[in-house]
Length: 328
Ligand code: G3H
Ligand code: 13P
Ligand code: NA
Ligand code: ZN
Image (cartoon, rainbow, N blue to C red; front, top):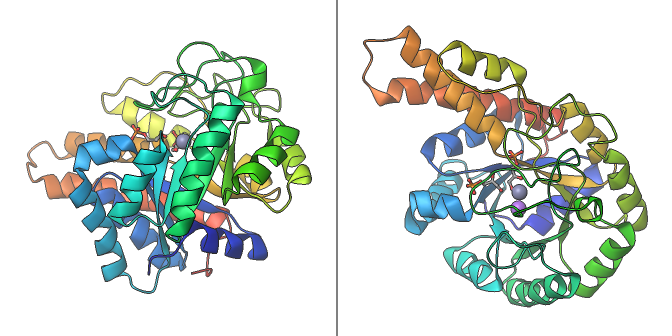
């Protein structure tokens, strides 16, 4: 059944767990997520970016999500718009039947230029007024995702600041967060703590100076009743990087957010954990390996099934690690 983000995150807060929010673009990702959730009896958050809508087309995305609730009627599913760049984008998602939208007013409508605080409040208030009138939840964002090592935003198409970000922009200020939540009445708040989108988050296994879990603790102490969201939370599994590189890929040394650090976040108010890159890496590794080991195969179902299995394994591991087992 479809549920709103607010309903699910309230349940997660009451029961002390966090929920991975996986990005979906296609059938294989959707099946991997739902099959994993069924196995461990976990609720689900699936999210679609602007890029996903462009890739799959709005009608296919909408029906993909509906198909999930039709095949698994007993699993609560939040269908969330990831990184909406304007109230208008959020409105279109609401019309498509999404139960939650992200109004990312930390960036201007181009998705690249860091926005000032007043702009962020204004567009987020607009999105909240519209969404709440429809029973739809809103995630806002304060602070800019990006690396504390380089000041760069990371490399997803469509979302991410252009140019260097300052230390202040890269870490959400707890006092400003309190003001922002009060002014906008968002249901969940995405914060910046040194993570960034994509595979190239850290040049070394992260320590407290480049992954600021302490900042999450400070924010949570100031606004303990606000559900916090961690973006850029892929762990970038070293074993999948090795598989990709063994079978013809070329991915340089890089590190993600360790699962233990996410668990620390969940102990301190993080309820939604955004993960896209890990499923991309697992599916690419599985497909490269499958094609290399089965050179005569030309049935895409075979290598796509290998990708689905690999993604499902990641989903299951995250559901278990974040405490979702049995919470559906
Ligand atoms: O926020 C970034 C997500 O990983 C979505 O990425 O814009 O390439 O679909 P995308
Ligand atoms: P990753 O690139 O770390 O998977 O983050 C995804 C994300 O934050 C989507 O909003
Ligand atoms: Na989001
Ligand atoms: Zn994100």
